[in-house]
Image 1: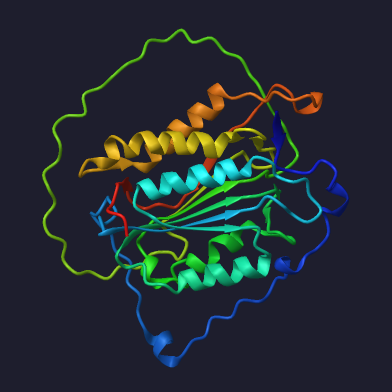
Image 2: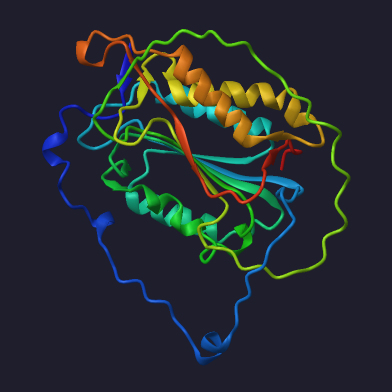
Length: 311
């Protein structure tokens, strides 16, 4: 049976303000030297992220029991399959179950202070209940941006110019994605991509100025304001499909020196969930519904995902 990662009976508290929502005026400390410093923005010819010795750190925040919400039965399947998938790429995988918001906040800040300079990327997977703009810890909800704020360029210097990837399995609202039928009549076309470009010259040391929010990818299990589905026996549609696509790549393209483009894999996940999955539940309001994963990207280069030696 399929369930949604949002409690239908928790709406009476959804407008409550929680401490994670506290808005503070951001003050950037400046000095005379900072004010006189001239920042220069310039173009770059680099179109692919650096190939580093290690895959990087991957965190998994798994939530089965959330205060005031229905138990997320089947989430262990998602946790275990995601752990195995990330391990197959050589990530340093760290799994945490049912952390409070305070524990999550402390953990993320600690990991952001680690040295990521020899890593390809950073990955954070969250599996929990959610609502519009929020995701749940064990004890409370918090704004989803709290997940990536510690890893922005001005907070985590060793992840500057490196992909920071966030997979979020959670509802984002109360809307349901209905099925729309269509008939395909066009033929598949192919095109010749031509010879591979010549290898670029050795890079020279140059200082660039980029936004602190650059080089992020946030991949949501569902569209904004919509439900996200999880099968109580098999796990969530999104995480299971994501891991299947990544596992296939880890056995083939990601083993090659050039690796495989991440966005192509994520598009394949979108296609698999959109075409192959439909809810099957005794709750008529949730039955025969669809789900559309989607990602927000500020990646500035192509990320070639590669299998790296285990660390």
